[in-house]
Length: 505
Ligand code: GLN
Image 1 (spheres, rainbow, N blue to C red):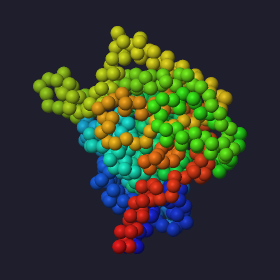
Image 2: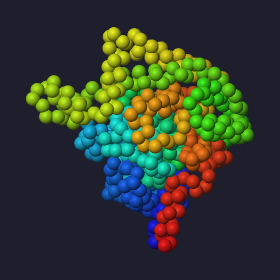
Image 3: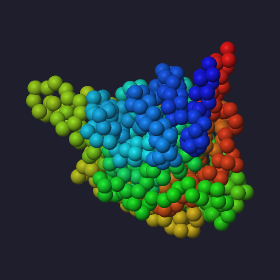
Image 4: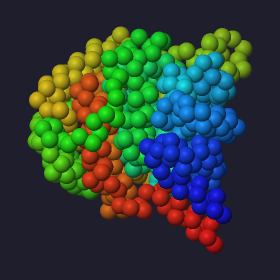
């Protein structure tokens, strides 16, 4: 019973405190890792978050970490702190399904650079978590393995496509999860699950071993309980890599260095266009209140106009579908993926793709083919390229005048499972605020900014220039210290309380 109580409270701790406890010898990595494994076993049947748990290897890795600590040779501050990966990141010898029937049995022969960086830092890998099929979606409902559920309210979506990552962190099933963000897939679920999520500037983290969705947008980043945790993980992830020529070593930094510094002279602007029609009143109030808090903390807060902002979503959809369609051409039952039985080669291609891909993936492939077709290219793809350049320029100019922009991460809190499933246009609208960062390759992070009237978490985004991530982390950390979510409201705290009652009974 004592053990039960102890392990549940470990699952409520942020990675930074787990790291401190490991350093001080308050608990071992084996204790910590076992606590999360037990918690996964408890929560996963109801939430459908983990697609596979690497129980034996995680335990073994935790023991190896404890040996290193005993010898005084930890590999990093996070040595012994476990993590989980979105199931579109390759781990050698493990399946990597992208939540698709197409890759149901695919075992990659190598490990993604981002994953091996965390493993080389001594972090035990707990398992792989659910996502929207091939990272296409905003709710985790397009997963071939069924939707994940939001730990704040299991009748609601956790967001997507990294919904499994966000739900796992919010439920206390892992302190750290690695996700991918092509048009908001880290930040949107982070907002809907009340956790911190970071999309670094394009090129900060190597994409080697991330199954490509739209290659000029994709970035890997962490989801954690706090932005300090995410900064610690970014210290391990950033810094180029040998197999991704877009990965830029110059974007590496000590992201934890200035977290305690004041926000004096930091200029933050709210884009007027981000507070228009369709924005939930609770979210609007919360983000405006956050701006006031940041002002009290010393920042200079102003408003500005970004007239091209509304171009972002159509440009993103056009370009990302074109790129995704090309990237998915390799899944034909011959080179990669599910193979249907067929009498001749064209039928084999057709049937393998018909059986292997779900509806949303097929829709995107068709949209991509349409905008790249000779007849339609000029009025779709080419115009989207222009819109992207326009928005990029506008953002660059704005970010010469101010250090960062502040706006909502999503227009509202998490919605009931099924509500938007048959209405792709409404589903796509939930990416409205997140796609500009991907179109312009800029860093952006989402952090909780309070609870809605219904008690659901809401998120706000800070986005800055290409090298601004350390400053974004500082503003986020100062805000979090001033305005944490109400005590006891978070699922990982509630689960602890329930566990403790159970243990006492
Ligand atoms: N929700 C967005 C989409 O469906 C973002 C996807 C992503 O970032 N992977 O395209």
